[in-house]
Length: 232
Image 1: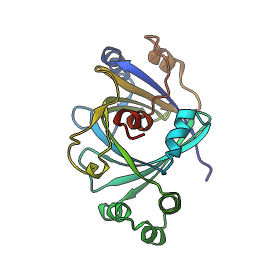
Image 2: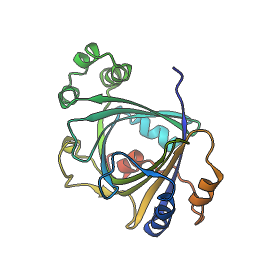
Image 3: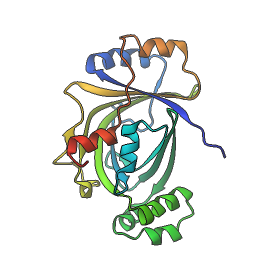
Image 4: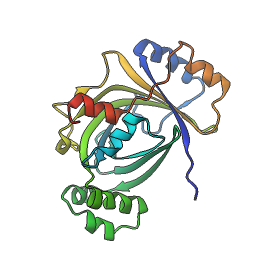
């Protein structure tokens, strides 16, 4: 099956702007299914890269073709971990996902990637294990943030608001409840807005997103997290 790449527009916004935006989004978009009663859920990601930080350098260079691996879970649900491969080509993104168990996670973290490779039917997991075993991919940083997400299923539009984005280089703390040494990636009261859609964004969404004249950015939580934590 041919991969489907989506547009992904990012903005750095103030709390005031986001509150105005939310009031309008709630009129025609639904809350994401991961949301709690307050419409928020926590996202925690563990990013991998090779010894030369090739994925990070591709982001910094603005490479038209690039990718990154991460392991992710939501809230405290460490019983369901997600291996994700995020690929970007000419500004459009595609995400491949494979759910893994805590047992499989432990094998990967303990240097048993070849055992995992030979015992999985997932092409994504096989590729990940190959890159660990041959290109020395390893965990680099953790990121954590609070997310509010809105979806319009008929048009396949997704709008996410990520608040309090922080990072830690203490990768062994990934499954812990809190990261003691996490550092913020943005100034106080600034957050990340992402708009994801297929081919065309309706004109009313264009108007809504741009109502306060904000500009798109290439904000990368992974790359900025590396800089802030002094990991690279």
